[in-house]
Length: 304
Ligand code: UDP
Image (cartoon, rainbow, N blue to C red; front, side, top):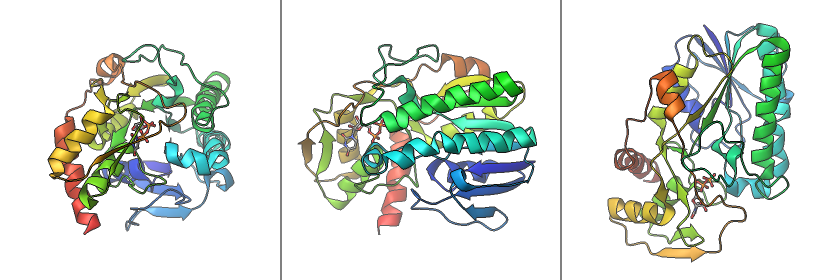
């Protein structure tokens, strides 16, 4: 099997490629990558997918390329929007010319300020079309529309995944890029203030990366053409509770510092995963304490 993994050097890709059997080519511009190790036997092309041309044929085109950090939207809104639009178009064209299976990581962000929690795939979303996060959520929504158009017009075998707050080792922690779990772990281990945006009552449901890999491999299987699935957790957690859990697990003396809320920050998010449970016979296995423990240990290793 020949796999083209676009964005394969990032957080999700670096976990996924370890469990794919076959010839793997990664295309990644490394624009958001901090913890990538180039592995022998894997072809690596440093290139933006928007500029990538190839005549190679692949069995699978896996498109993970995105800039998914809300901190990053502020500095790179254009790049964020283009990777989820022109980038997706380029990836789809490669898949169409190869008659490959096309797998795409969309996002729970497409639901915006969801009014149904946990949110099922049938919910259409409530998104600010031109707000600070629109570069990401609207372009992910466009990607989904384009992908379904390739299915309808060309019969391409597409699968759309909507991941919800996946975390684990190799997630970046830096202030202008990191996501909440890696930032809180970093701050706790360094004795810095834990920065909570708003009052901390906003919620997320976190999925450990090995559960994500398992679901993703299942989504690459037979008979799933046109399938759209939430892959996440339904265990909703307040951000303040996450901060306190990390403080106690790291035995940190860091203080919690409340900062102004992020603009358009979704107040609640959790996945309705009943469809994934049924179709993939999958459910998360790693609970938040176990996942945080492994992630904290990994951060202790890299921060020393
Ligand atoms: N968050 C926070 N402090 C941080 C980083 C994030 O309070 O240093 C909050 C953020 O406001 C959001 C949640 O944690 O409500 C998840 O943020 P993240 O950046 O991981 O991504 P999102 O789920 O919003 O896409």
